[in-house]
Length: 81
Image (cartoon, rainbow, N blue to C red; front, side):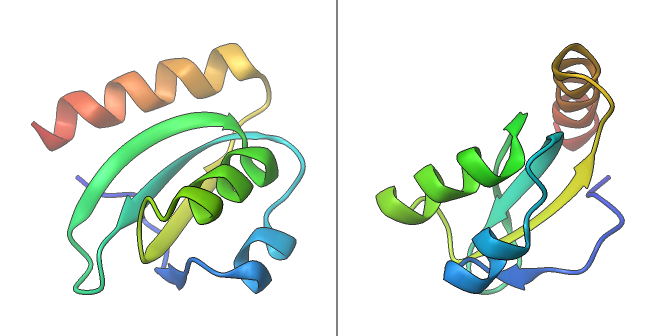
């Protein structure tokens, strides 16, 4: 089950809009196929993803702590498999 958020283009505007907080994010291709699920401080993670060209689109959800983000990401990966 994908995150219940709308896709955004992975560009500088999306990175700027990302909160400087822990969270879970999905990277997708142009058609919305999920390529990766990961967690971390969202703005930092998306800066790296943009720099390395890891996807065309992104969506995320915030978490309270990095530990909670890691747990949510693991659960989310399990649901996608």
